[in-house]
Image 1 (cartoon, rainbow, N blue to C red):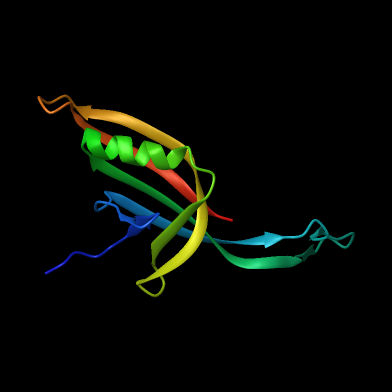
Image 2 (cartoon, rainbow, N blue to C red):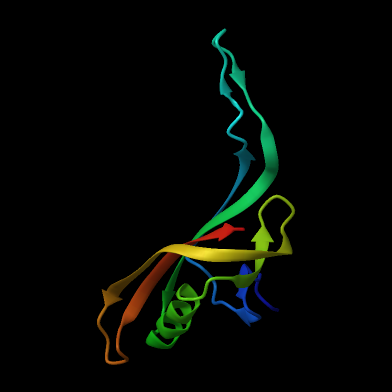
Length: 120
């Protein structure tokens, strides 16, 4: 039995994450905001822009692979949409890339890698 795929970056299937949070946000024009009457006016120019926060416990091999994605400006992402539980495609970029040593082992350690993916 195969496991659920959460993320593919540039065609490479990533290991199972330890955490996965998908957020949808709206992009508003500068013309929106609070009116003189004190009501809120939203001028939405784009709905459902995806941001994903993810973390992995991984080997040094995966730390190197994930780090190589961090320096690329545009990534082709297949991600698990948590509303439909189906894979969707998007162009994204990485920010808030963090690597933390969890445990030192004879195999160069167990590492936690976390980052955010944002849709263009």
